[in-house]
Image 1 (cartoon, rainbow, N blue to C red):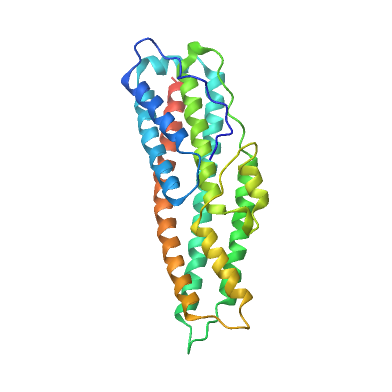
Image 2 (image 1 turned 135 degrees about the vertical axis):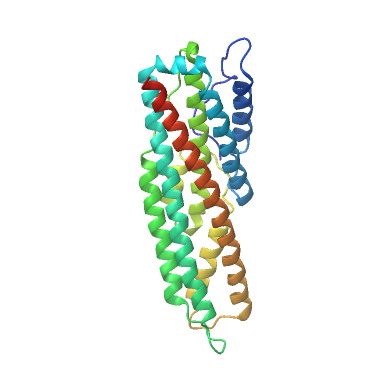
Length: 275
């Protein structure tokens, strides 16, 4: 996904001989930004894993005495960073809730598939329930996205530590927006309002999502209720659901890991300013 945040035009201004951890953070940020042009299964998973590695480095960065001293003397700016950290945690929580709701509804569809008898498929109510769940997910994500505020740029380059933390948060926000875009799916499936919030002022390529595939397959089955459903359609739907379940599991595990790192980073910042 193309970033909506204005980043620094050059690398972050660090001391003439920056600590290796700071250099590592700068490199990780560059890699994550370069991977935000698409929202596919592989790119989303790669981005989430990259964020986990990024926050591992952030934790090391925050343990450096000089950085702790700098942060302790910038209370107002750190308050902004802490506020932003809450919004990131909210996005993670909303995404995990969306995944959990989708997983539970998918299980109902699978149960209906297993109950089919004599070639007759009676999954209309379960399909409608799943698609309604998707609409609920859209509303929850829409509410969450409205609370996202642009990350303000630190103009005083003497505070490079704060500047770096804000760049980390901006990159995290954009990566999570890419995740949300993947979960929500494309505009073609009725998610135009959410897509507009996600892609505002961006030129994002069209999302490729297994969520889209399952939505389309279930909509197709509902529309063909009277004309009958072929065995190939049943097989295709079963395959797509299994694939989506695997992706939900992988994404949820990555989100859980990222959530723990975000909580740890926030706790470290709170400890630093309380000294």
